[in-house]
Image (cartoon, rainbow, N blue to C red):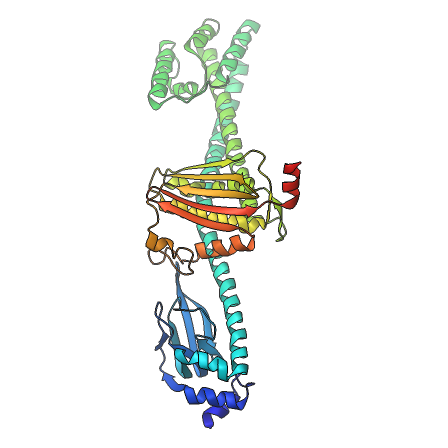
Length: 468
């Protein structure tokens, strides 16, 4: 009777009829857990329903950063297996945080519970729905944060290269500007004639001429520097100018033509002025190119996260999202020297979906493909219309997925990655997001070829326009 009275004051079950509480007491067992004692083990079947009377139980799962508490139960709550639940085994250990007292109902009594205790069953079913909603939102948020961490690491590397180039070239530009100013002053002091100025202008034009297609090899560049250094030595000029002049497009013939008109200190001033001017232009161009790289990467990030759009389903093109995803994963592909190709069918109709969610799907699938392949591997991304759907295929040439793994690949918390490198949530969340976008996802895998295939319905306005 004392236990029935305690259940009548239980926060979750106290509103149930006393005869139902009495049934629970009759068929249950009172258990005491010490702090640190495991109530349910990861990967093992949950043996029963647990009504927490006193104390505190917490369930933690393995994350890349270590164990993380995802749910907890205190006095007045219910843990363990619930009626009609499909739970087989928990994703982590449920451990008593402090001395805890529970009323345990064996798993095999759940069916009898649903027949004998309607009100308790009703309470527990609603509790199960709330628990599923909690796990779903928690899993999605955790996977988003994990994906964000991976993305941030790659972006830091991608942004660091052009940012470092800008900093380095800006410093060099300051030095080159000083050299250009000094050379300009020396050139003014030389008081050249019109004929000499014409030869100087011709040399300057040769120096800043657009480089032909291709890049000189280190050997070719060294030979050019040596050739120009010999020319400078033959004319009694400073051989240290050879490096700067070698970076220009000026030819030995152009130098000979200039030396035929200008000589001595004036010739050296002209060459320093031409070389420094060319260096300034080159550094400015490299700074501009690096800045454009950063701007393009920021644009890709903005498109990938879709942070300037409302979170509503809308007609959209899958091509830009796939391109943005590959752009933000370029650093990871580069680390493996992997080739990632995209082929989008011309005139591909739009689909109706949530842009941010679709990009998360592409991000997870392409990221997994990059994990699967070896160095110098290949990932192919294609998007084509097939009937009334747009089908996106992500294919990698990795070792493939064994049949025993394939049948569990979309199960929550299932992962083949080492501890701390995967949560087992990525593909489960991909599946949920695909379903939320009214799509389908399929997998085919043999050694050397794994294909994830996502089908999305064509937006009505896009389908109508295509059929006209």
